[in-house]
Amino acid sequence: MGASIDVRDLARAAAAGDQHGWDGLVERFGELVWSTIRAYGLSPGDGADAAQTTWLLLAEQLGHLEAQHERLGVWLAATARRESLRLLGAARIATAAPTGPDAAQPVGQPLTFLQAALFQWVNPKSWLVSASAAGAFLSAEAGSPVLQAASLGGLFVLAALPSCFMWLAFGAAVQRVLHGRRSLRIFNIVMGALLALSIALIVR
Image (cartoon, rainbow, N blue to C red; front, top):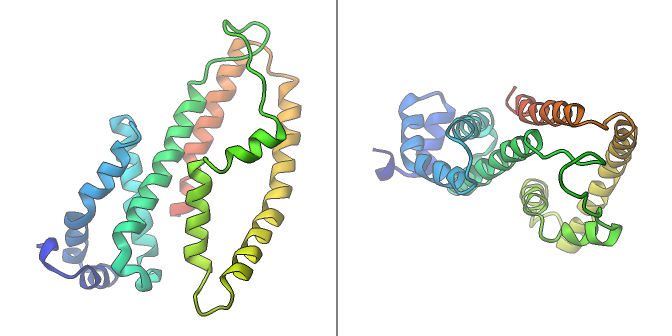
């Protein structure tokens, strides 16, 4: 049914609360969402969580996406990718091997400032956030694309600097108390759980 109906009609019907519209969207894009999630190797439980969150976000934002109904597949794939990365990061944090003087493996050298800056050019989350922000806030009718991009970049810097300084201070403080394997494991599990629970701030 969903494959034979224009995606814009399905989206309008779903936004109006029509269950047939939602059924059609799931039929049309369900495999796209799952294939995107499977590419990240999530466990079946985490994969189901990522898919559920993707569809919940669509239900919450569909009324505001009317201009993007033709590109709904792109939006769903990007959202599924973001949620997969979020859950994958939470799992990796929770299961990270302890480091420190009593760890079994030697501690690697931290990235330098230049290395960390260069890493952002190959960081998929940075590209995803940048592309999402550009699609949401930049407009072809709003003037010079270079000026718009510079303004958006400046806003990112203003928003990121205070947050980064807070995290640096938090990390320096926590480093003083995390010495044993047990405390590091507990900290990793708590931080991973908090990262996964942060999804609630998006779908509420």
